[in-house]
Length: 465
Image (tube, rainbow, N blue to C red):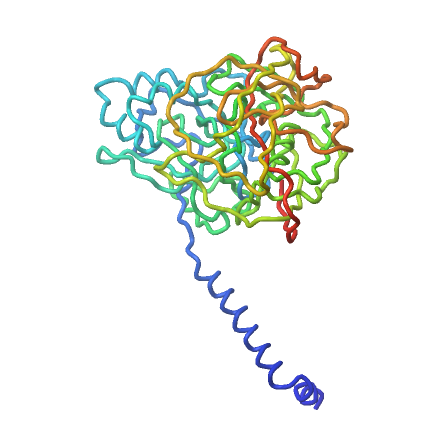
């Protein structure tokens, strides 16, 4: 009787609206169920490829047994602090031998297929290899792998186990699997809709968690130096300049605390760079990244909270729509802003104790919203002298700006003021920064670029940084 009375009161029009809403909800859930699952082949550490470009018996690269680190599953940017690992062992990947192999006329067909998979020409291979950096995976990582079959590079989705040695490019993206020389490109599917296929050679490994796998997206600038964690001594951080193989590494203490900066009002692009420069990881769940011009409204934990190197900060943003399309396999690398000015002020010297970044401040565009980057080529580039400058500076992604030392162990001054300008992927120096006019000896080089100005308010969304 009570139900009858309720129906009589709400009226037929209201019932029709409720029915339409229910149909809409059911349709959406049905679409989600029908969305394709991405088949992914498991690739375990230390297991040889059945179709390698390079004979794995010659010791081109060495995987290691590494315990997978807890991470926010989904997307991570290539300059995220602690995303990759390193060690004191030299030559986890023999880049010189790989270059000799691919430039040998006897391997011309393999070289052509290898270059095509990475969207470069055969002639560009030596310069391209000069810009790659060997690292160890600290997370089970989704990639677009390639076998060599019938004189062609045959792509397939793969999940690389933690501990596999790879080479990464200047966007922080996996580029080559070291042990076999097989080229890698970004995984293009939905990380939450994968079906990992294990087999008798690549059995499910201990510690595998489907919800913790990551896919790497390009950093918003060219990475000049990677902030790694020693896989054997996690309290030791490693500053590794891009294009080096460990001979120029410097160390820093990952236990030192760094303060969450005040990011309210900053664009998402600037905020994510600032966090990376502080040594704080930026992670994104499943569906995509906020637009670069979206404005940050809050952070969790709040500004002033002190965290260890590589810990996560969640940002709330307002404005723009989510973007999730990764760079395509076999196409040009991710785009970036070509109009950024050239850096000018180098800073701290090579004797620093950890990663850092800087470059002079550059003006922001006059129109709000995300920037409109232009494509670049993954081919070789000349390596300018590296240097660094105070953490409060910024420089363009189109050039090779300087970088500095690891973030300070005390609270960052930006916790009560507007966010600092964008800098490189490594955390700032543990000592006080010199003025922007200082010009000390160079270290590894950061990269930065300009930010769009504050835009109009929009509905708030949330993302994990």
